[in-house]
Image 1 (cartoon, rainbow, N blue to C red):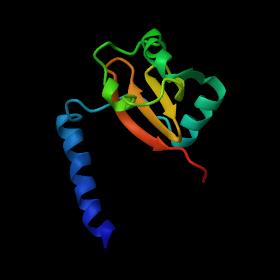
Image 2: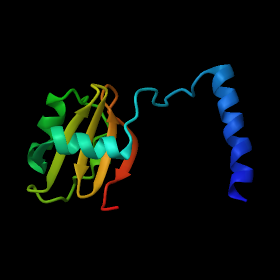
Image 3: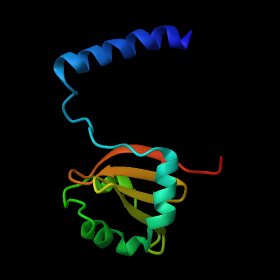
Image 4: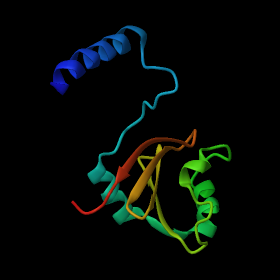
Amino acid sequence: MKGFWQEPNNAAVRLMARLFGPMPGTYHGPYPTREETRAVLGENGTGVVQRDLGSELLSRGFPQDGNWGALCTKGSPPDTRYVVANWRGETLIVLWGDTALLFEKTSGTVYATYVLGEE
């Protein structure tokens, strides 16, 4: 029954996007899959501790006015470990625990969250 209600909605959204263009403020760049996210973190990720996270993100082009609150570091011990990686030059991936946040690099906005636990 879920598909019955969802498909007309999806068709309407696709039609409106074709007629009027994408909704303002939405992300339009490349979008890595969960598997691509896991792979880039494993191959190109840089491990940092929380006290060095800010300088690492800024060195990778994260904006000063980006969504720092999404990182939820307040109250975390200074030795909390993160892994940071760039993907295709437009996405900055930050992993802590099993949660990966995907940020649009130019705006600092989170556009996706993956839980990368064991499958």
